[in-house]
Structures are given as C-alpha cells and as structure tokens.
Image 1 (tube, helix red, strand yellow):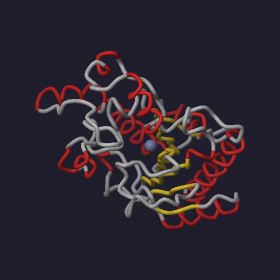
Image 2 (tube, helix red, strand yellow):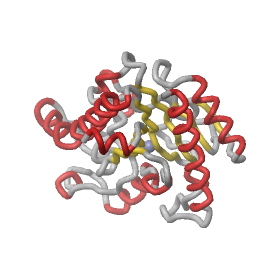
Image 3 (cartoon, helix red, strand yellow):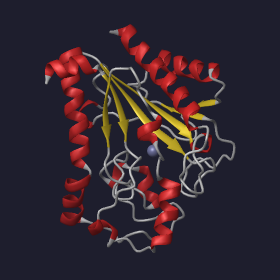
Length: 263
Ligand SMILES: [Zn+2]
C-alpha cells in the first residue's frame, strides 16, 4: 500500500455530491413522486463533478461518495445538534427537500444509527484511512473538496444573494492556509472567472479525527457554478464543458503546486 501511495501523491480529491444513485430500499422511504425526485436531483446534484474535477497528469487520490446526497449527505455532521442545516430538515439525512417539502419521515435511535452505519460512516472511514496513510507516507496531505452549485439560490440556502460568483472557495480557519486561498483566487482571475471566498457556501471537508488539530492536513473547497458547464434544467453538459474542465484542471494544478512547494 505504501508504495502505491508514494506513486499516487498526497493530494486527495473528495467528491461527495456527484452521484444520482438511490438504492431501491431508500427510494421506497421517500414521500415524493418520480417527477419530484427528478426535479430535486436536478437542483441538488453536483452534476458531472467526478469528470469536471479532472486531475489529468496530476498524481492525486480520489474519494467519491457512490450515492446521491438524498441518500445521505456526507458533508453534514452526523449528529443534528452539531449540524446547522438540520434546522431546515437537511442534516446528514434529509427530511425535507430544498424547497422545504417533506422528503422522508424522521429517523431516530437505532434506525438512524444503522442507516448512518450503512451509508454515511463507510465513506468517512475511507477518507480518514486514506488521509492517515498519506500522512504516514508523506507527512502532509491536502484535501480538495470538489463541488458545484446552482446558479440561483435554492430556498434552503442560507445565502440568498442573487448574484453568484463563477467559483466559490470554501475555507477552514485551521486547515486552509491564506496563501493557498490567494493562489487559487489569482488562478481564477487569470482564467477570467469571478471568485468569492466562503460565499455563498463556507467550509471544507476535514476528516473527523483530524478536525481542528492536525495542521499537516490542508483542505480547501472549490465549488463551480453549474451554469458554466451544465444545462441546469436537464443536467446535460453544455458545449462549454471541456473548456471549463480545463480551467478546473488549472485550479487543481495550482493546489498541487502549492502543496508540492510546501513538501
Ligand atoms: Zn456539493
């Protein structure tokens, strides 16, 4: 394992919201029609981000959540008390859709724990174990949290500002170096992309066991406005997809160079 990781680098692309997969057992628990489900997937899926964040020749590792975020959202804290979006019925297990309508009944106790054990925790364990192995091999690790976002604010969004940037960079006060943020901001501007930091979305993924403590782990979230590369009414790629993919590759390269420069 160690040799494989040395060849594969120490930057991890975390892709949590690209999948459309909903197991039949989960689908049967959702109180919505197929048409409503299609609409909600259109709004909530980070379409094609598993292809958009293309590392090309960069040596990176990838952790991709294999299920839709409607199954569970691995970017949210598992306990509702710690998760601000649980106030909108959108904690780790969504009970509401993005427009506030009922999605599923509240789970509690043993049922909730076994559901999280089935869908949520395996993904976090995978990310955590990979991060730990990279740290053993390289002593440093960078996580790039890869997302896209709707061109118009969703009703559930905390930030309802209509004008949205092309790129949103999400940061963490401990794990995101300011110099890295400046480097990615500059790379965006050189590519002609407008960029905001922690607006309209904030934060970035850090494995639970390292959160706020291990400064050898750097993390940054890069979110791409979907209207740049996808028809948001169908989920189909636009003709611009290839050019945006190349731009995103440029941002990944900038992350990679920053990380290499530090190692
Ligand atoms: Zn996302």
